[in-house]
Image (cartoon, rainbow, N blue to C red; front, side, top):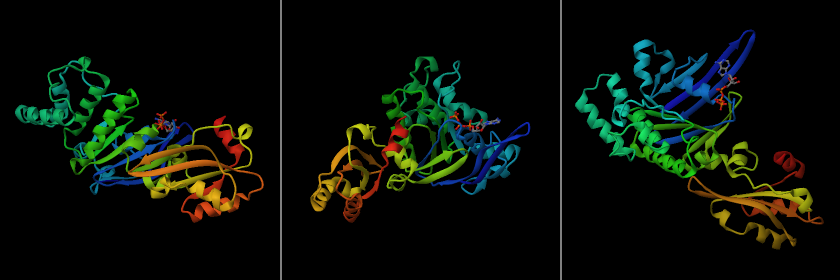
Length: 337
Ligand SMILES: Nc1ncnc2c1ncn2[C@@H]1O[C@H](COP(=O)(O)OP(=O)(O)OP(=O)(O)O)[C@@H](O)[C@H]1O
């Protein structure tokens, strides 16, 4: 389990102060995967450096299974750091070493003898699906295979936390999914808490149990995936369940209403039922259906014709277990701009 409490990092540039992290708190229990998403400049790289103490936070705590890394110094810090396995966008392997020697490198550093190292390396290579690649060199492997080697190396010192920094940003879609499935399988290894820092929504949708949105150094939304998408107002919901763009002003008259239904409700025709009950033709103009964290979410945009009170439609949709709200077409145009 990793617990981050009120983590703050202030950089000083002359007289100017940059609060790259501003009171970040989060907890990732063992056996779960937490995603952190944010735009460029949100503070993601700073967070990776501060979590691993490569950069000292200005204040706050980073605890792994109750041990505070920010209090550790020199030898104790080096030992504590090994509790976090780090995987970057590129595996950054030593080109002149074999794959086995790359994976075994962290064990070599702590003086594990050759026979034990070879045994552990073979076990790790099997775990990441490369049991026969130990004698190869990095240049002989594809990008996806090199990333698997990076993951094996991060697991070598038997960490409690695996921290992925944009692990699939350099990979094609098929390889991305293979690596994501591998990451997903690791959480079942037992005691690992997994943190994935990414700007890709697909990564969050496919593997994360919970997610935080980092913006200007602050966590502005956070929670289990199923909860953050189950609202019409959240930025994470918009990003993860976004409705495909359409041109609302030219093509569609009436009032636009967004409708969110989840679970078993997502499979029932709530709009058709509502149409019948309010006695008005409700036209579906856009929509998306997503399967996330084992649940189904349907996000539809409908137009309510002039002459029908949108509030009556919203009340009926809510009575049927969906959530609904009027959407301003001007906001949609701004989003598309
Ligand atoms: N060493 C530094 N000195 C001063 N300011 C810094 C330093 N490192 C980062 N910053 C500032 O902190 C803020 C967060 O930067 P950071 O690199 O952590 O963001 P990021 O989310 O990783 O962005 P990207 O996705 O573009 O890498 C930015 O305003 C950046 O300019």
